[in-house]
Image (cartoon, rainbow, N blue to C red; front, side, top):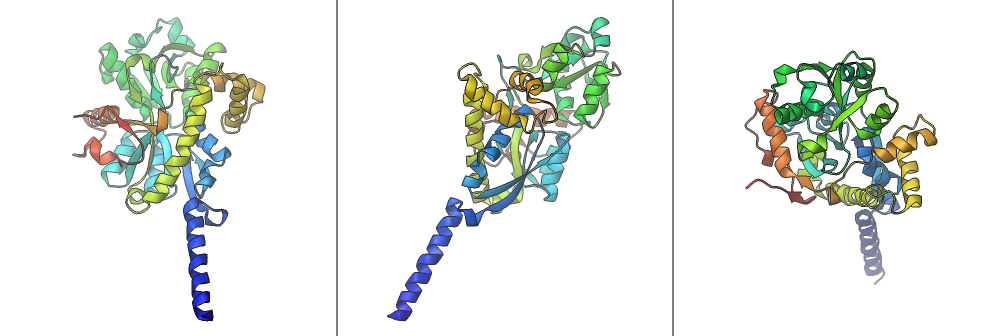
Length: 343
């Protein structure tokens, strides 16, 4: 009887430990690293982190910051980070073609009526007549890297206004900060820029907003992705991550997409975001840019599949991605809703 009792106690203890691991108990925190950029479009990452949503799912998250999108994909493929939140790029597609990456959800999207990526002119180019996106033809455009999301956005503008990519001079400057400096100094004529940077630049008369990418049609700007190995071998971890992340998205949408509804809640959230965006500036100077830079985030991390296909097709057409891979090969389903799925 004593042996039997000991066995029963052992079984019960093991069950409790297992339950704790599943429910994310304090002793079962699983360490993961998440790659991000210090943009307002990454706010749900910061919200989920600061409000303990990751910890509630048993995830001990470390945030690792990058200066551009393509290095995030490389870091996932190499195993340096576990999840990435950034734009799709030629580098991403090429790594996905090698079987390294999978998209599990969508985040920042261009939507009519919301200020997303701004199209900007240097003061010098604006004074010379480049006063609208249609007039970018014949001018220089700052991008981070060939094959970057900025490269794709330039392609969207060219397609909209009927000129070829060869009609513009692309200037790969590696970092967003270098892009900003080049346009402010007039060394480069144009760039696309996140609103929390673009709007303050325009107000300070350091550069001029001449249009918005949201006027050019749908664009799934950023996605949530992870390694193919995670989607094959660690589905539970990915689901836990996405549950936490969706809570961050819900909090963001409830406040930042209608900031006048609850000013106190807006102020609290902006202060949270300020820990990561414009953290080197006093809050009073940073807050207006953060508020103005509130972009549209897809509810529940839903993914615009049709636009993902459009991006892949464009990169193929430009010779930046050489693969027989289709959009279906890019996506791991079951983690977020999908819409505009091609028939």
